[in-house]
Length: 195
Image (cartoon, helix red, strand yellow):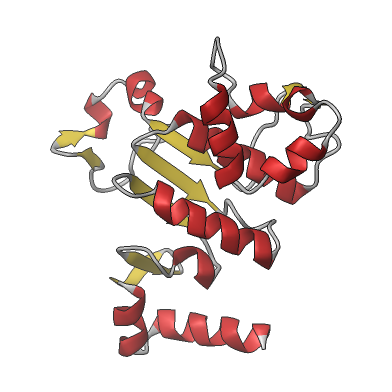
């Protein structure tokens, strides 16, 4: 969807326009991406959240950190947002790195967001807080989330279930639960594992 690989079959469209006919540089300016493993720059926390900003908007920076549930951690550090972190996220846990990457996407405030296992390193409490914040932030945006955790996808407008690379069902959480198909079995298995 970011145009790194052309589709093998079918067509990806943005509105009525084929993605292949849109400038990828222009398209990506409107996208925010949080991957399972994202890149942390050898720079300050502020410049990791707002890497492209010539002048960092402090209000947006604080909002992004708050929404990603990392503001308290950052502000507990002696240099706060001016704390230098390494290219490998030196000094940060995997969950803190993911929250910095989520804050980066929020700071950009794009129309299109792609989250690929973006909360897999978070503990249950952080994930719940961030998910509640993101539900508000996602209003009016197009969001594609790839996840295995039920808590990450259950509020989606449309859940697409893949099994061995094939779409087996799609619908809302309630619709898919009522059908008692593949999604229902995934949910049931997760609930049993967490019991």
